[in-house]
Length: 130
Image 1 (cartoon, one colour):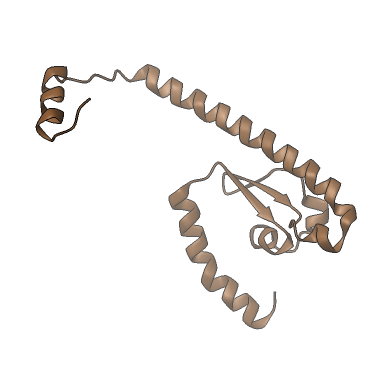
Image 2 (cartoon, rainbow, N blue to C red; image 1 turned 180 degrees about the vertical axis):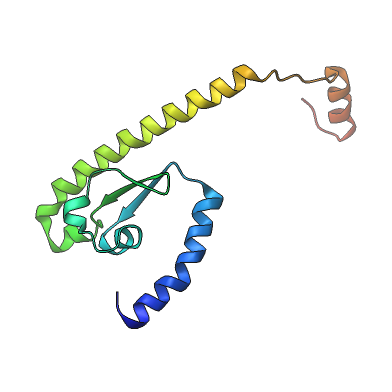
């Protein structure tokens, strides 16, 4: 990036970085060279695409931008392959996340202390039925 593009990226990056921290995604998919270049400046999307990368403890999965297939139809099977890989990554991430959740829940005893009759009466008082 040069000149004003660099300045815009620098100003916006702090907001994106904060959003990433708040959302805490397990997987970030970069669509195209520009978004990939924000995470890995100077690297080529053509060499990095389709391979998960680590960035600050997060998984980055670079792919070609879908609009690139309009300009170069030969990229379509490559993009389709990357999206299949992405689906597997998402499924694996969900499985790992579920395992962690189950492990955490098995260590925690959840109890609920309420009287079901009180719940029914409260709903009736508001004109609602269970």
